[in-house]
Image 1 (cartoon, rainbow, N blue to C red):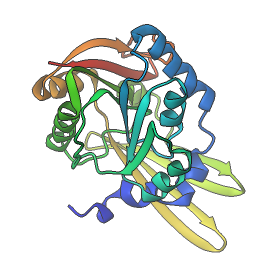
Image 2 (cartoon, one colour; image 1 turned 90 degrees about the horizontal axis):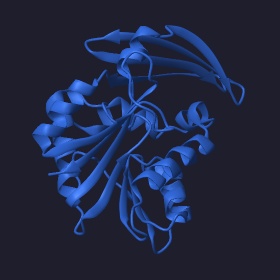
Image 3 (cartoon, rainbow, N blue to C red; image 1 turned 180 degrees about the horizontal axis):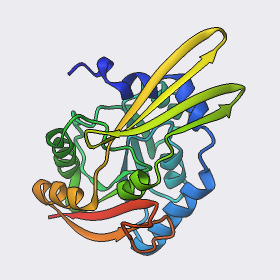
Image 4 (spheres, rainbow, N blue to C red; image 1 turned 180 degrees about the vertical axis):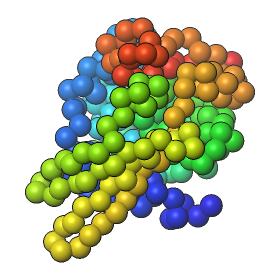
Length: 245
């Protein structure tokens, strides 16, 4: 499939995506990453790949903690912005997770803040996780941070309007064919726009199957950025730590 026909290729490369989501809390992200580093004690200089890194906020912070970080994203505009922060131990690259080719393996792979489940089917999800498996050193660690689909569906806000930088974003949500669909409409400078997000409602059991087929063993599971236990009924996040077999 041509990536230009896929919703995430157009939407993530749009400046309006960053306007709508630009409020995301860097302190919350840093709190999460510090908790992970404290718990797992990765060696200084460990190599980390940040998958679907956006403009690189997580990669940049991890680099300040002394790690060798590579951030990859499909959005050329996001990577261009991230490149302003690059250094000898911090690199960024435009990359499709379905087609990754790196010569040197990584100690850790991270996929943060629901940057997965954008594809059409289970087979493509598996392909991506198999690609991640190949990126890692033996016994390397893969962390995925996803929303808790069960709670999102139970508490789905069907309609809301959000104002960002003077733009009114009209948002509608629904669950269709096992995916959470968000339709986003707005007008700016006399022009009307419409985008959509379509994310698979992947559960813990789904991830268990994907990881097992790809050659990973799950070693931890958390339900929040303070690393508290996952509960399908009330946790906001589904954070899975897996090790390459």
